[in-house]
Length: 515
Image (cartoon, rainbow, N blue to C red; front, side, top):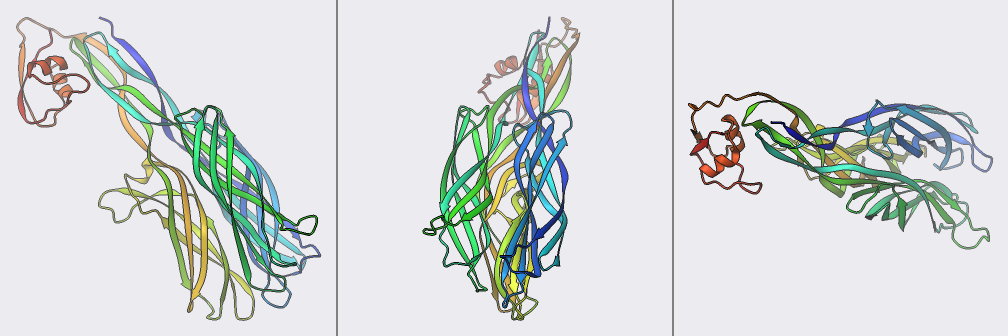
């Protein structure tokens, strides 16, 4: 008798591919005449702004610029801070190993490798450094596996894998405009930035509608003053983005980032300055899948050789919309030091081992650096870098290697202060996205019938088997090459997909031989 096999194609997760690309920096900044000369370099930081991020086939291409921001102290009386910047363009390409990858943009991260910044003269700043950009993609594997077997006296134990698979992803640049009042004339803008806080996302055929809030913040110093002033403003944004292959029923994971902000004075000289913000929206779509496979099989008529295949499918462990509090504290080198302000650089969220848990478990966390601007008793400004870490309180069973975070993190609130001779920084971290877990199991990859059993007339027609509680009926029938339905009927047990598949208690079972 011929064995008939009905196959099913499973899109399985096969790992994470990652590479690191170096972005070198050789920049020169000339201080214009309308700004004061350089007395001291306080801080230089490198930030990548990726404008295009495209993963097609097994090739990644990206371009954008490194924003080199320099804070310097002027030669004027008092500890006055000024800011200047330079943009260093880059274009990068990376070849991935042959294979299939999750559609859409790659996941990006990175860190400053080194940054040397010096004032060559009062009007010229020289920057030499490098930024390491990490590019990561989810690798997928198409597996053609048996979903159902028939003929040849075959008995099979079905397996249904439920999970999610990447359906689509897209990024798009947007521009938002609002007004931002500033007091007086002659103020020095030190920083304008912000974060995007997602609120809701709706998926329709071919498009995603996302709503969120841009939390914008401007830091400036009034003319002739040394103190910093902070002005915040929230702007509700709603955008509809075309996403190829998007379908109703997909789960959407959205996050965004503010790339740049420009403050322009009104042409008439009246009214508030206009704030123009360029920001990027990122959307990932995950589609639920249900794959019918065969977990085990045997024949009641002949020997069978099974080839097992490992299967890995992603499952949604949690949709994350949480905030975490982080703090950094240290002694100040000078008891008269005055804390002027702080900004934060964050690393990517990741799954970390949960310390102190009774069973192996993970928490979501990450690391960051607080850059604290301080003025000493002589009026000189210094930037102290204080590393810190943060974690969300919730835990998930498992080890970090079995989780795939698809998350973004942004500092939505930062406070810096001193208490006595100690410096303290507090940050509120907003975390958005999904935490995926890798479900690993084995399924039948191939079945090969062998020699037929010798069913002589003198063979036993019935076997007795003393089963323990919790034994699988399929495994008992397989031991004797019997039919599962005959085993259930002989012992007056329920049969069928909805019936219990294991023994409820220890018992002596009758096992009819297959004829």
